[in-house]
Length: 146
Image 1 (cartoon, rainbow, N blue to C red):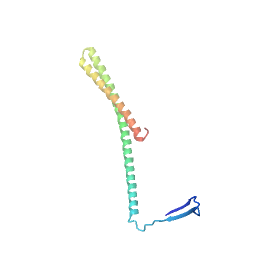
Image 2 (cartoon, rainbow, N blue to C red):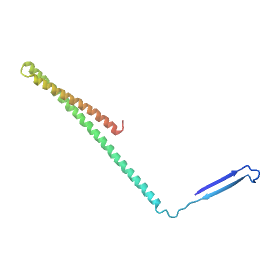
Image 3 (tube, rainbow, N blue to C red):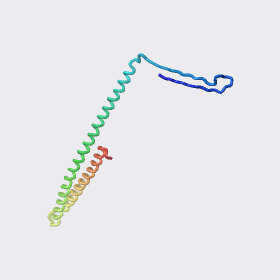
Image 4 (cartoon, one colour):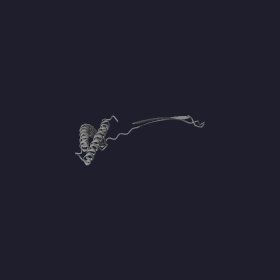
């Protein structure tokens, strides 16, 4: 339903009265819409269901990302502990091989191999620390702290 009113005024000495009024009421009624309203309603319900499914999927993905980041962080902390022990063993191996070399029992190749093993153990240790830091950053990102 639409209601409209208007008043028009003109200054004209040959016209009496100088203004006139008008009013209009316009209505529209459609007795049969051909199921259009029902289809629109069904469409809106389908959109709402799709949005709910997308939200549930997103919640699942977030939960998975947080769980994965938490497990990665725990795993890297265990790797750090193992790598620390490996570094200590490599340093002890190097100490023993140097001592053997100084006593004339070992060879310089054994010492060089021990140095290489210590370097590799140290690299694994620092890689584990780097991975732990990155896992912590991924966890903070997954929970929304970043």
